[in-house]
Length: 133
Image 1 (cartoon, rainbow, N blue to C red):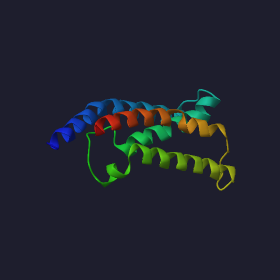
Image 2: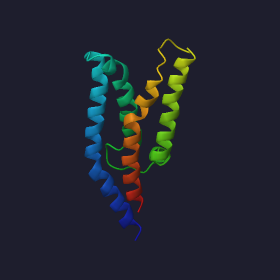
Image 3: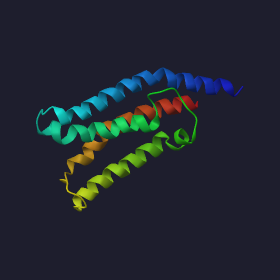
């Protein structure tokens, strides 16, 4: 009896994995292209801050591949992952504010960090909850 829901969750996750993989490639490619292409100050200043946390969220949650059940995936639930990522991103910006390393503090970076991360989290949370039914 219990294998049906597990198989159903796994097949739903696996069906969505190619879409997450495409998102991962697009986000990573866009973020890294800010190093090679200069399209202005917004491009250079915010696009990597927007895409970096988002592609790492997909990586940490292993959304891009078939479902696994191990210690990593049980720890990095949608809620845990978003919480840790927001803490790290805001910590990086806080370190810049306190001049703990040579970088420029920009309060708009806080918005950049979560601008794609929060929508991805909500999509993941919805599909994760659907998987748990």
